[in-house]
Length: 83
Image 1 (spheres, rainbow, N blue to C red):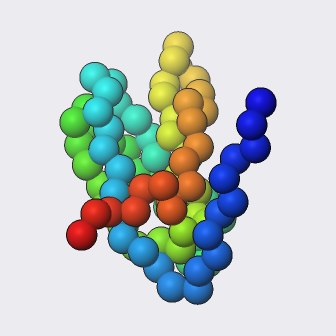
Image 2 (cartoon, rainbow, N blue to C red):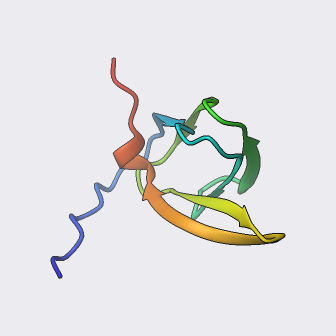
Image 3 (tube, helix red, strand yellow):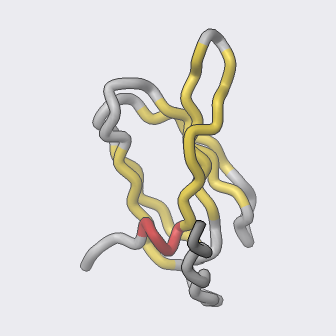
């Protein structure tokens, strides 16, 4: 198993973008932030943009059989919006 790429260190926020391209509702939760964490529900095909430091993490949850299941974790530097 290869190691994850190093996380760029930055003191300023970047504009991050996430797209729920699935046919199901997702709960996204921002963690490891310099500011307060937040959660949002994203419906299928819904998009969200937000400022965050590169080392912030977006946790993506799905609901299965009435329980919240962590599907994946994405670092914000990987979600940097294109200019």
